[in-house]
Length: 135
Image 1: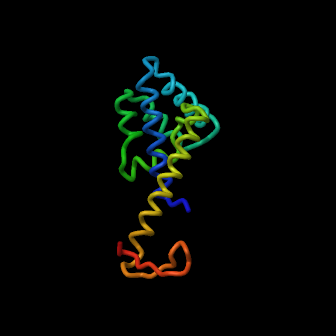
Image 2: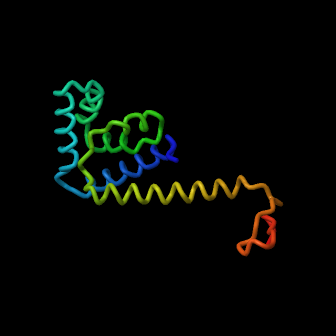
Image 3: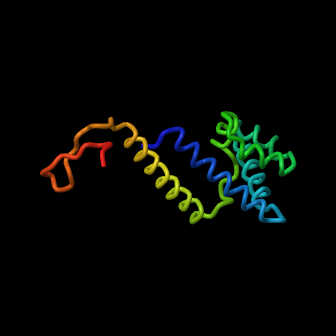
């Protein structure tokens, strides 16, 4: 099950990849694309885009810091950032799969920690019991 925290982690990972892509492009085409997307949103009456329109007028290093900000404000801004389309569908799906694997691993670790030591569970053969927390 996806939690808000899981979605925020995935969103931050996506922002990191977007930043890396824009950093690697001397023409900063991804930044220009975000400005165009944001302008379209504003033309269509998207009031939330006005905040991003102001942010996108700043120098890249400031925009970059905002995208990577791990605070509640950074999370809020990433929920509707105009950088959609900077990553290819293949790059996005790679992030989705990576996030799903990471969350599954997180849940697995969380469940293992939640099992009380000394709890008996059936062995793989089903005929004997093994006690968790014992070798």
